[in-house]
Amino acid sequence: MILSPTGFLRIDSSDLEYRMIGPAPDAAPTIVMLHEGLGSVGLWGDFPDKLQAATGCGVFAYSRAGYGNSSPVTLPRPLDYMHVEAFDVLPKVLETIGFRRGLLLGHSDGASIAAVYAGSRQDHRVQGLVLIAPHFIVEDVSVKSIAEIKRAYETSDLKARLARWHRDVNNAFYGWNRAWLDPKFREWDISEYLAYIRVPVAIVQGERDQYGTMRQVEIAREECYCPVDATVVPGAGHSPHREAPGATLDAIGEFASAVLRDEGSQGRAA
Picture (cartoon, rainbow, N blue to C red):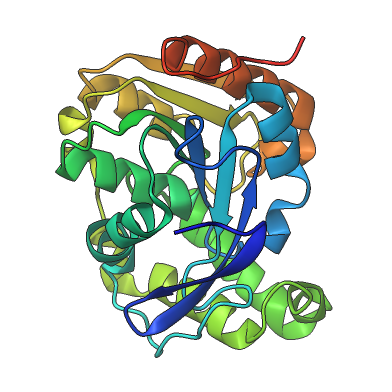
């Protein structure tokens, strides 16, 4: 299909909003961005534009169902919702946009989805993974922070602020929050997929991430047979691309340049 700068993809019964920045997938490598558990196309801000300028790649960002201006989902979400995204939705998104080669870049939930996808199939179009603040297991700090944000959502202006980015803000928030706070979700563990990833991995981890510890990086290094390059961003929390965009872009740009050097990328801007 011909991708407009903005629009919607029809995937199964859902309309998923998207942004496409830079060259089309048939003209250059593409970085496909997978947002966090409360994210959307809009919440990436101008980071996709900066990423495109830094790498020369096309950048494709979309809102999963239940987020942004995409179709809502039926609640409660199943506890394997990230597996569903990796197995059923992401492959159709890549086919629909004509993805030929490039990187998957995921933040938080999006990083987990990218890892499950790459570890469950040999998609030779995917030449590397960028995982920002990934989760491979559930940690105590994750549950504590997610419980705290639930209180903030219900007692502060957080709901109103998130409503700027989500057409159905309750659908977005509770679809994510209730799954993570379900006691059965403590058993969620995707580390088994890491051993089957066959492309280089770059992890960008905030030093002060309130949703995960360095244990997540250690698991990747223990389980992956592929190269794992970890960048710890001093002073940053769970969203280093917003809190320290310069350092985050430097890390991703260097990784993209190395991985896509022979794949038609223009490399990082001078």
